[in-house]
Amino acid sequence: MTIHKEGYTSIAITVLFIFILNAVIDYRFGDVAWLRWLVYIVSVALFLIVLQFFRSPRRMFSAGDNLVICPADGKVVVIEETEEGEYFKDKRLQVSVFMSPINVHVNRNPISGTVKFFKYHPGKYLAAWNPKSSTENERTTVVVENAEGTPVLFRQIAGALARRIVWYVKEGDEVKQAEEFGFIKFGSRVDIFLPLGTKINVNLGDVVRGGITTLAELT
Image (cartoon, rainbow, N blue to C red; front, side, top):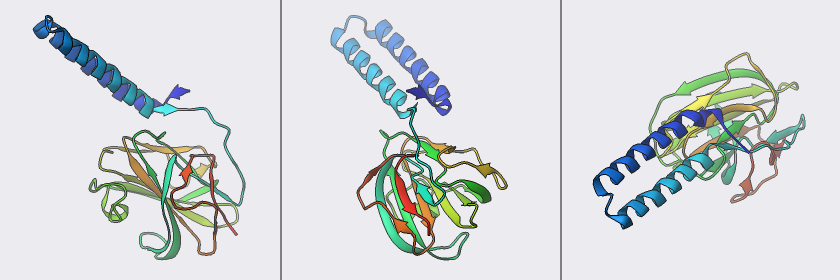
């Protein structure tokens, strides 16, 4: 397992905070053994939590021209027919994956193809499971069209804890299935919008893995 590049700054800040906190406690309360040990335990726990959040495990990825691969680790919280109003402006099948703070937060391209549309939206930080988060939270929208001309829209959505969305794509880019297209820090959600009639291969509540789980099959 490796640490994702997006974690370097956060981990460094965490280490600095822990160092200062422990130095202050040792200086001011050096004779209070229980307090010093409590701070030591909390410091180790905080460091491990931040470290595991930015982990980027090595994986063997799934692939297939007609397959839609899961863009993130997490749990399937939405499978429904809905109106997609930003790009398609028609009905689509929506599959949403909620990422808790303990999930790997690397985001991966569900299909290979050309980026036909990209837009970043500043916004609120509602809980990621709130239905309004799809349209009101900080988010990005990416549309990739595969070689057969089928477009798939996927959207990074910040959650109540997330305060930074990172993306690595722009319009016109050629992207490869399962490669990284972004990262969201500290809890979030990814929505995928598929053509009506797409075969969905997951169920509500399923635990999925980015780059590995096949969400759907394009017809």
